[in-house]
Image (tube, rainbow, N blue to C red; front, side):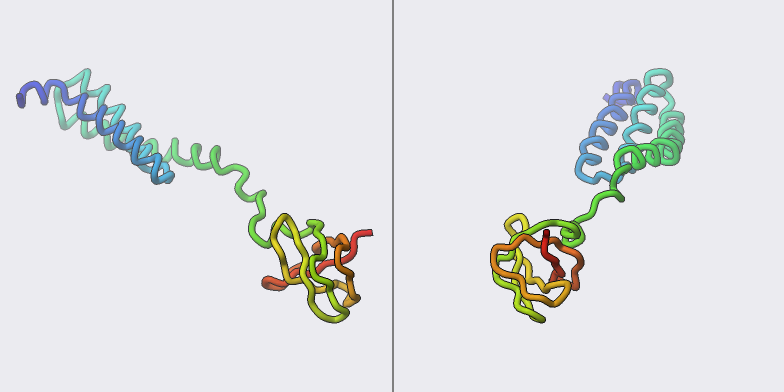
Length: 150
């Protein structure tokens, strides 16, 4: 049994690579993917040689090389447009909504934008009637500043 295992140690590396790829799906850091690449390289080395030490060295070196070469490429490729997207309240800037509760002069009202209702204040301090279209020009915490859309 031990002889079979030592002669077919490449199967261990192949199973390790599959396990690493499964774990990579849940982590998304691309470090475990580099270990899977190293395990595949060690599996190929296991088909060529029976030396477990040589296989471990191939695993370690190929994993290390892929961390420095493959991971940065994968990170750049998969996260290339990340900086262009705005989220949360910053995504409201420039959006047009409808006044759902009249904004009183010098006071507050409410504006509906895409099903969300926001506390709002007029940019020029003037009153804005119920049902008017307004554009978001700024925000202070959870209170948005709006102006009439002409």
